[in-house]
Length: 156
Image (cartoon, rainbow, N blue to C red; front, side, top):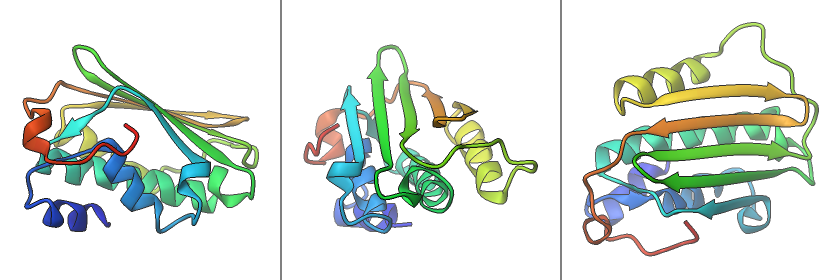
């Protein structure tokens, strides 16, 4: 997981969702700006939160590369964010292979659920739509300010 490197380079002050996605996506596509679109409000994470959300993003990207939108040439991931009384992230995959709900929850999905609920007091909902995975993540507000994050704006 590359989020650790990102935090180390920022002296463990915190970061943004855009930074996390950029560094984690580099392992899965050489065209992250074309295939992964981040729109909406800028979401800021303290270091503990960043590690947890980084694990979740890493797992979502791994699954997208193996089974979803990133497994095809034209697949795309759209991530919409909101920061109003809480932080919301909606991950939507398109133009990948048809999606079916797995029979068994894999370790990665279990890990995402456990980490986001236990570490971040968040909620996650995975919808396996035929057109592509839709994952909704709801997190409580952060106490970390933009200045404390010390992360440049990279599209989030």
